[in-house]
Amino acid sequence: MTVFLQVMTLFLLILSGFFAAKKNILDDKGLRGLNTLVLNFAQPALILSKLQTPATPELIGELLWVFVLTCATIALAGLIAFRLFAREAPKRRAVLTNLSMVSNCGFMGYPVITATMGEEALIYAVIFVTAFNLMCWTLGAYFYGGRKAMQPLKLLTNPTIWAVAAGMLFFLTGWMLPGFVNDALAMMGATTTPVAMFVIGARLISLRADHLKDVKLLTVCALRLLVFPALILLLRFTPLPEMVVSSVYLCTAMPCAALTAMQAERYDCERELASRGVALSTALSMVTVPLMLMLV
Image (cartoon, rainbow, N blue to C red; front, side, top):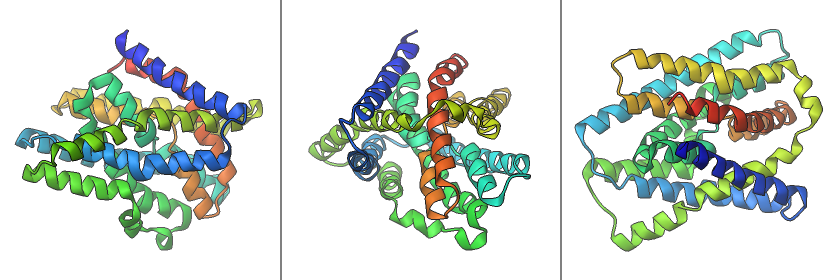
């Protein structure tokens, strides 16, 4: 019940953002500014702060498993979706595939994992997001535009990746930042959850009733929110550590990634469809995420 109430708190933050956008308290320019704040400052600060933890051989092994499983899960999801939507027009197929393939593991995954499994589990989500970014700019880009669209070097412009690289260096070497620096990072990082939830809620105003008539988009939501997370649960019958399986499961159970809409615009592949998929899956996750948490 405690976890359920914590997740409801996150959804109240989402409703706050929805109300602000609905009443024109915050326009699109303001939302883009908040989005930039989270991606370029708050989230990297949170990662650096949480990676200030002692490394043990057991923890390093578990993090490697998270990275491998995340890459494998995303690749499998992408291949399944790509075959499933084979009859769609190329650009629509690319968007539907990417919507199905990757989750909003950064914006929603971090706060949900923290609320469900505690602060110590956040390091697993950090590794999940690292693998997520790698797959988005390689396999995800391939679905959009073939080999010429694949841009692994794009990762070098991502502040989150730099934060992970620096944080892992500290983690593996045992170096610790001065207390006042880590305190500043923790304060900045603490804004990630409320601001991210607020932005997500504001984006929901683009939803309309007729979006529920798009059967393929509903199929995407079912894959993203129910089917692919359920497949991860099968790993509980393996010797893998419980923390590894649970963290990958929760990150996979998040709605469609907001990055999908950004990539759809970049590759000129039906950005409106991508935005609808992100908004619809996020709205539906308000029902599915609490249900999926019961299986943790």
